[in-house]
Image (cartoon, rainbow, N blue to C red):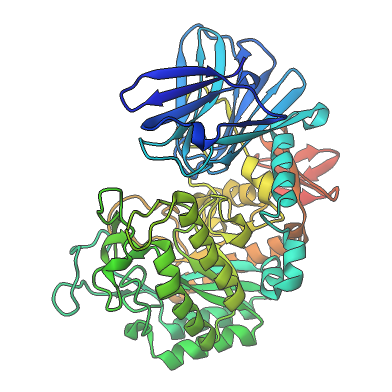
Length: 575
């Protein structure tokens, strides 16, 4: 029998029987007692015994933006439990004895923690919805989809969620979207190339910066003229389709003075130099766009209105880290859209940008509610305003991009800079292996680079990073000066794409052109759904596409025979 556990602010727990209606478990918010802290849905469909043939499917195995995984039902006498607040996909599942159930969290999909564990060989998994004593603004609700046979696998659950998302109009396939938006269609043939022009020290030496007083100097890595030379060389090397994004082109460089953008950083060149760079890219047939941010703000900004801040339940502005501009404070996404994004995108369009506009942070951090008395937003509404900004970027510039995998704005997103942070993150010992769940759901719907460490994989010693991104359906992504921190961990890796010398420029062009030529042989698959990824041997993977195409991937140091085809080491064969 399924049960509700209603947890009050004082820690007391009320248990109630919970009966589903059809395949839906829902608790109307009118029935939620005042002062409720949390509510747990303990569903009988998600119970198992150690030794049963099956596993749980967990969408995010540790903190946010980490891979999905499966937890098999091993016999365990000990007690183990794990809980993850950031389920980047609002689903969880169970595959057991030839059947499977996918739970889709429809109500309060951004306000729950997924809990799973084993208590003396009894396995359980349930969502814990958070109210924190506030009056509810949504009814917690879960829809169950039942699968069997060949669909009773983690990949079958991923396909079911993809089909569900398409059926409700949450997103549109790339092949269909590209008919309306030519830039989106062009991205599927293009290799993403990001050029970081300039930045200030990170961590910043001053948190509240004032020009001419304590603002640190801007470091210039690539001027507009040098960026033009990169485009010249790429074109000469045979790169026919490129999706170029300029990073740190704005005043103060990357994260320098947001929401201020203009003028372009003077140390890089003039406005006319920027226009010439944009035109050069277009003359070569390349897409070209920029990188800006309308969530993070810095007090050095001239046009910042502090009444636009996102504030917490105590009325305090939400602080979010320290970057080039100093202490970052979040803007309310409604205010950011109305007061900054609309104006900016009009100006970007006038400059001639045509490509995949990148708004930082949008899809990598969970939306926060705004408690400002003049522009309050629920968490869901906050996410919806972010989606409006990305949708406007698509309308104005051609396509939209952001940083991570959260799917609350999947209908407005065209490119993900990196889906997951770590290839193999630390996780609970309950988790047995990682699975490419997100990639099966959204390949053919958005384009992406798979991991932070697969960025610049064409210049990294570990050749399997390039192959892993290809295997999971990613576009090989190049990023000049991905590494820019003065201290701390470089989350995209220490091996970088640079161009300070002629030798560095030559090597980078050579490797990017090589990556483009490899990608060109399989670019057509960007418009095809990825249905499964199987492992016939430990160092082998097969990516199965909906049109019958397979990518046979060999991660070993020696050639391998896969389904009758000889595959070179660290390489793939398309069949």
